[in-house]
Image (cartoon, rainbow over all chains, first blue to last red; front, side, top):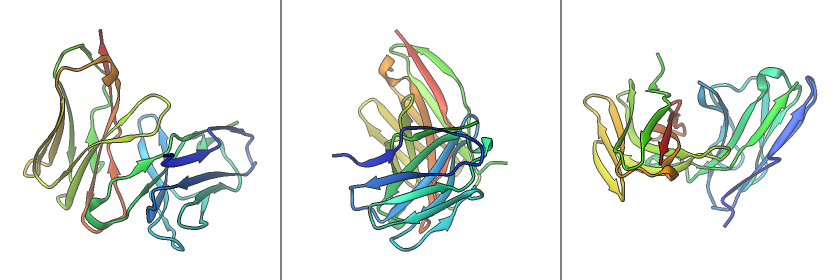
Length: 114
Length: 111
């Protein structure tokens, strides 16, 4: 009963390097989300995917790209990492917009950009 | 002004105390209200879910929504050291993909 699985758990990048954060859910959820969490800023939505084949920008999309690979998987890519992208990244999933469906979160990827 | 305001704390209480955590919001369209608990180095987990106004109780936890005042609360009775975590409120309007989170209140319950 894995729920939402994120890989890797930790990553250190140098400025300018690229990487992809992976996320998979096994709850047959329609919607998937990427958030970043920073001290004093709370959770901020980067991108979301309401259903397979669709993606939309959230509050802080600059510097990121996403791919909804299939219903289970939603990846987040940093093309050229910057120190301002040092954060904890959470993937989440839900059944969707009907009746305020709550989110289920993974345990995060802790990213440091030097 | 943020859509959702939450005191960051930290809030430090002795074991057995009643804890009150609160959020205020500005968007009158919010209909769904949630509380998440986040332990250190873990993802948030859903604790309480409420639709519209009223109270909901689950064991030692009570969620309260006052839409007229745009104010939600989470009460924890007989608090335990295992309740030490960050508590995030979250809310959304109907027919929207987006959940708006408070910044979280850090709670510490000491023995």
